[in-house]
Length: 109
Length: 115
Image (cartoon, rainbow over all chains, first blue to last red; front, side, top):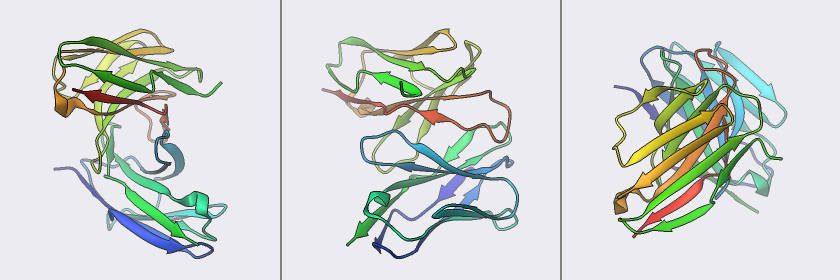
């Protein structure tokens, strides 16, 4: 079956760094997506990885290892506004997104 | 204007009611999607439309009926729902399905409560 695993909740301190992990098992693979969703708002696109390695975009970076079925989202210099849920999704061979349940990130002062 | 707009934002309905959710995208995309988001569960894909034709229906009960009159508008018609259908219903659009880097853009959703 198809499955995406990510931690349910994480807590971090303002100004620190946090890494949110995601492991995936899908029928085929056409890329790994990360989205951010603030409470009551739309999920918004953060990153897309299809090749192994690290993609950096400002304070946010995303890593992919296809051989391990593993990705992480790295958030640096955490700000209070980064408190949100982070959704990991793998695109399968039918170009359908298979979603994780999301990781709720709590930032403390 | 925001890219993907959903109305209403909140909806309370009885099990015998009929209501419709509306989604409009201003991004010039060819594909539109309906998702169900329940607390602490992954997003569940319900329907996919490409150029106004339904291309995916993930075993959704017939009490949910989608309609896509053109590439900018998507509706979800609801009738005789059950309390377990209470959830956040999200609409999304993307440039075109069938490409790996196809990014989906979401609306803020309709929070549905079925009494």
